[in-house]
Length: 110
Length: 189
Image (cartoon, rainbow over all chains, first blue to last red; front, side, top):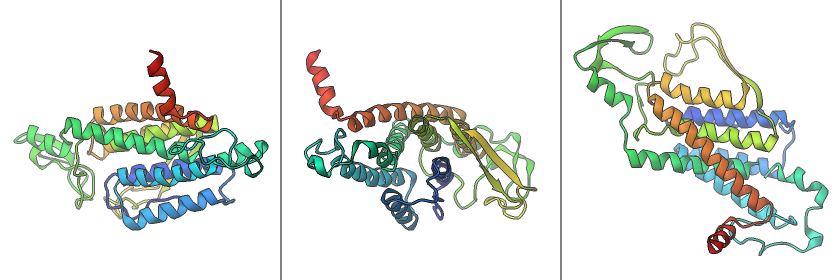
């Protein structure tokens, strides 16, 4: 489901394999048929990468930036987690945060 | 999961390319024709030609003729490093080493020898994530674009980077800023 196609790089198959590994894990977690905002953003990033035809180091950088942004945004709504750039400075008031019982369910997508 | 996984892949890439720049090592496409010039070898003769006898200077990797080898150094294999880093994260995140997945290649579907290879359907299957990663690393040797050491050390580097990335990510997730912790430890010493 996350195939990297049309790359001109000879290293392309590594990314394909990583994508296969990723999709396998998602299937195992029975998430393949569901969608959520983290998957939507990841898919948008992957489409951008396909269109831009980036080399492997740039691909991994692009994905890391997108997912670090998502993590930092999520961490503001968590009781414990701190962001990578501003620590706990963006933490939202207790009432707005993720209820403890939902923490792991949401975190698995980030 | 994606936060940890993609930062591990990103760091594995940085570490692999740092090694490439540091060692500036030779690829098979340069080394083999140089070392085997004037000697008869048995090797792949080109798309659809199978294994033939040739002068070593004519050796070519099993790759598309339009891009026979990536234009950067051999050691270490980025492919191997990326592929080895991902299982380390996914295993720890899911608590399982299982993968149980497969990919089917119909006869003639090779991008290098379209129409002739493979002669019949080939199914690659993996029980564990690590098996898939190892095979991804091995594919670079089958493809003639990496030497063994670049593959094996690339895998080792990828695993090592992922272990460090996992620990660092856990600190963020559990509310400790890694840089502050490192600074405090340094002061105590």
